[in-house]
Amino acid sequence: MKKEQKEQVVEELTARLKATDTLLVADYRGLTMPQIDELRTRLLESGARFTVVKNTLTRRAAEAAGADALLALLDGPSAIAFLEADGDMVAAAKALADAARETHVLEIRGGIMQGRPVTAAEIEILAKLPPEDVLRGQVLGAIIAPLSSFAALLNAPLQNLVGLIDARIEQLGGEEEPVVEVVEAAEPEPEVEATAEEEPVPDEEPAEATTEADATASADPEPEESVSEEEQEDGS
Image 1: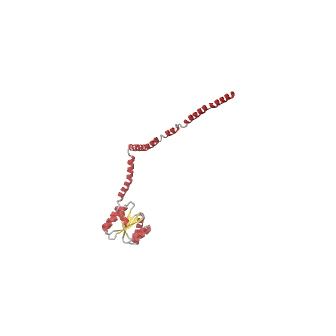
Image 2: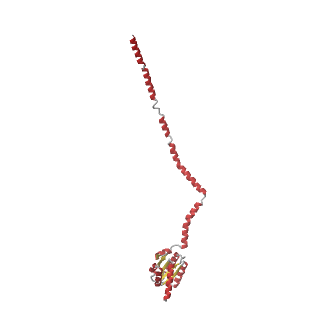
């Protein structure tokens, strides 16, 4: 390859690395050309472009694009799956994992996912997830289910609401009954006060005073009689 061609390859790789934030790296050593073409077709269907690269030129492009995490993955024959902006990362990971399992030759090294380095084991886990459209449906279903329940509550007949209110009122009325009973039980207290006021304790004292007065009155005439006798003695 001439120097001008190498410079052009480095520029193209640099532009791709700057344009994508997700890529998967694999060791394609041992794959036949038909197998590589089949894998490239699968990846295109998932929105990824599979490119066989030279490590020396790719290192230069990675350094120019600031993709330092890619440098550690460039060891031996390398092929990179560049995910497009509208690509499905789960489908791309599944395509690589299926090819590795079917050929027993392809080896996934790792990659960069949304700017973060990922290992081969993480890519295997990603490949086992449902497709993106299924995941979106599951998330949408999880969001819609509570909203549907809320809508059903709002659309419930008004009669049900009135019935709930009446039942609550009856419940509160039943709870107030013991309070009325306590108040009624406390009413006999004024009778005790009335009884205490009606006790005729002082009535006996005037009777005793009257008896003493009568006794005094009956005793008063005695001096008059004694005076009369003395007068009689003086007169005699």
